[in-house]
Length: 547
Image (cartoon, rainbow, N blue to C red; front, top):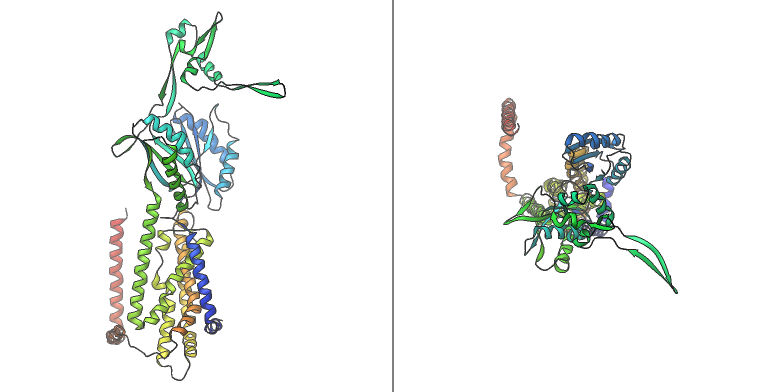
């Protein structure tokens, strides 16, 4: 089978090269559309259930909110475990599902279960955003010339945040710092006692005052006019003019028994940045499984638009964290290491093979194997990151091609009357099977890593899959492309050049081998001592670094 493939590739060399060009185009397309991350996402499929119950201690939160929700979640398809955190006025429940569960299916099932929960009056459970703990891709602060923390937080909540949520791939925008604007109604106990009013009277009056109502229609000739009563508050005076009660036909307004003014919610925390001791910060969370490069590109465009056309003069969004910088650093690191590895492999090939053409034939497999890995990642919908790409070993990738090219050079140096194609065919036939089996053994060594599950699998399985994809690509190219390129590169008679490095190594190795064969017991004893010494070194390292 392998011999027929090699013979076909030698006869149809142009077709093989054309297929390689198609592979290059496909790989470049996959790379351009590939999701590039700085590191893999190891998190499980989770759904957060957040419930606010103001003024209640943690014990009541657990008894009246968390336990009923946990009971309702039992039996949900794909559910692995449920954990809850109860704080003053807050219940935070995390439902973890197995890896095969789709995140949207998990959220839909959770929403259905929450409808069955009997919570206290006025308490409503909500789902957290569809993001992961590593979904923070963008951070910024809102700066203004006046430094008014109340005005900046209002702009953040009502102007900036809604526009950033419109960017595709953004799951949520979390706001920190500043002052949350409120309207404070401060009752006057003396005036209320004089008017015979209670706090409940004021509460009901305020709740019922801010409502719009419809008065039907009035026909005027051929027209029909819609009557609408506007009751929404527009100014503080509108609240102050609420009629709380009437005494002897005289209305008692809210301003008669209370003061109405703008205030802010009691502060629980503050955000600072540099010299700004009261900053307003925003954290953008990316939706799970989105491409951070595309999301951040849309975010930067939207931030520029908000700065230029939406925010008032003197107020700007000032970003201080952008995941693009980390992704760019990752790409530069991977590219730098790959370039150094490729150059080092080239130098080693030239030194040991003694032929620049042979080194180029082997080195062409490095970028092509990398493109095969990109095609695999894009086809599987996986991301390329520092862990998966950084594990590529170019020495192993070109190992099979090195063996084949070295066998060709050895036979071509003693070509005789045979044609170049015949010599290449015979030399490849001698080493194809052991080379293929050797690469398959290396591939089999990665299979246990590919079978890892949950967090370990999400971390290391992409690494193993990327390496295996590149090795299989190298294997296919070694059997197809390398013979075709070798027949073109070695078209004329080759003069055998003995490598100086190999000559020196052979002179050193020959007497060493003879001495080892004459004294096998000494070699065995030295091997045992070396094994014992390495074991002690490993145990010392383990005691120093492990708790």
